Length: 468
Image (tube, rainbow, N blue to C red; front, side):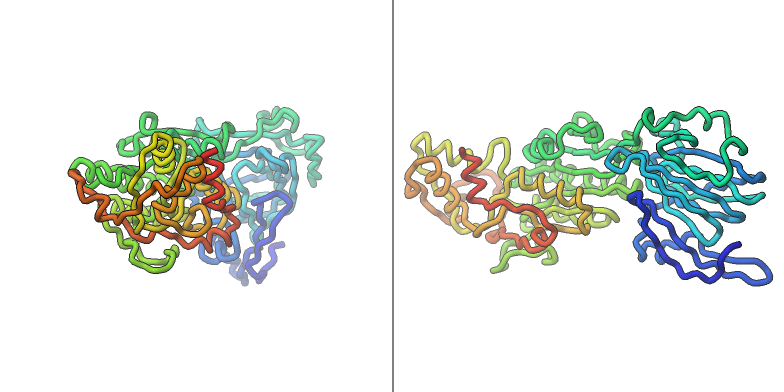
């Protein structure tokens, strides 16, 4: 008998992500009414905003009709339209809860959210039973499915009606036992720009697990009109965009301006469409150049952007686009040092070769090592931290470029007084090519990153290890 008047409540189960929902059903002599899926109310209680794209109905006229156990690569919202069913769910995802079981009965006043990879099965307890399920992907023969035998001894499901007495399809009878089940892998993580400095650090942070995919412009063209079909995007959970145009001064030329906008704006817009349409988390790496550097304090994530040059303008535009993706992290960083040509290696080389450099001393900020960025990105995605914008640099006191050059000289055993500090204007006074304006203050406030638990390395200590 359907229970009327229950409040809308959500209850977790022993299977991570499998959530039971009690639904208010309003009834009288005419029948009953319920809101089967009400996005605003249900997501406010913690149910995922899973973005259904298809609504299916299954009807069974006989008591005891039994289906399953099927695990699909999409999320499902299952509820009963009429009648009553016994449901059994088995976690068939890779991980520590593989094989965990949960059972309950469903009637029109109770629904369940079944996350991707959790096997589901149903046995009708009344005649003329119909149940519905919303799914957030379309069926595809190329999708990865997994199955478990209804009579598996390890699952030991307490079927109300013995399986020997019920209607089961021949196909369901042949499903494998738990020991032979192929687990559903995690949703894939795609790292774009994987051969750059940050991309190489992300390779080290994420490793070579089968669900991690690395690509660059030679294998994935973000400007291609076929991008929407270049992958089965519903299999991806996260896209990390480590690709960018970073030639700050060249961006001030006609060709550089075009290339910067193509990579930093057009490419991000294409990824934003893919991520939004497929429920993917987009991780977008930004820059201190979105600010003009006129503040006398560190910049917070909520300070308005005010870029000075073309590069900064394209990064600010890319940030605005990335922020429209429902699931996103924007990582603002500064003065990046990684595996490749960079300021630190240049200063170490000059010191070794006996060259005494003139270095800008009126721009201040913090170095950021690519390994710190990669570690921070993985921390945010692994912990499902609150989404939004995060400043992420190495920690420690802000310094000028000249201060850092002197540190490099000292740490490599050379006299730091060989470094002469000069103003930005003096340094570029003889330049023949266009020079982009630089923010004088590139120091980013790290409070939000610390509160999220991101491990922040002291810049001086990391510099010491880097040079060693």
